[in-house]
Length: 166
Image (cartoon, one colour):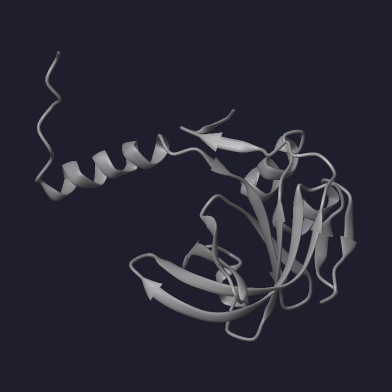
């Protein structure tokens, strides 16, 4: 059996190795939406996970340099839209391929209970309220309580790994 390369100890090597390790982790893709100053703002995200069932809550990790970050604070509503396999165009738009003021022109959107955009044919739509935010390094760890859920009939998630969709 071939031996593995040694573990990295140099900080630059650890950072590069960690980036490579995380690229190997497949993730579902979601669009997170919040209220902006005059229009809703949204971003594609893969760092979303369930946190608890009681109370229902999700955990999101949002880069502090992301355009949506200034719109996030405890008590603010957010919409989390878990994408279906056929929604690569929506993911690309909210990942930066489309200017921010035109992103909601991609896909079919309706309003959720907080009057935020919710993607009509997403795998699931979660209407949430931010409970807490904790800064860590370049990101904020956002805990949001889930208030309403809408599910699609089929289960065909959009999966992202190593810079590409599966």
